[in-house]
Amino acid sequence: MQNNIPIHSTADFEGMRKAGSLTSRILDELEQLITPGISTLEINNFCHKMIIENDAIPAPLNYKGFPKSICTSVNHVVCHGIPSQKKILQNGDIINIDV
Image 1 (cartoon, rainbow, N blue to C red):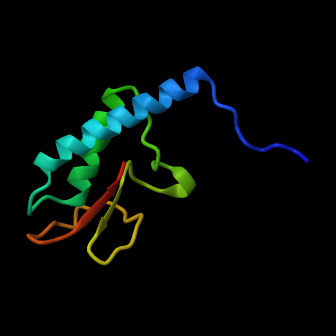
Image 2: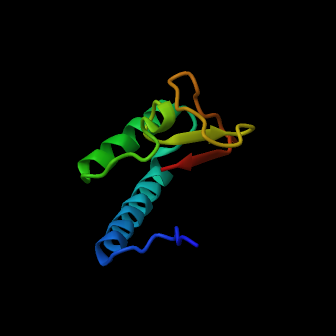
């Protein structure tokens, strides 16, 4: 029987730690940025810039044709919402962001 479980190297784990640390910093910054009146596209653009400035690659961008750097799911959208200039957050909205 073939073993398909990947064996990760020390470098792989270091990369995972860096990605996790960057994601944590982005989410901390978003806490201050996200207010009523901001569009989900503005949130995407902020995240994209921070990811690129840290020599990282936005995971969702171009994955199976996904057009943005993050997923923004507002209220009834379960997951993988596409950021848009038209989607403006209102007071009381619930947003999930996949970085």
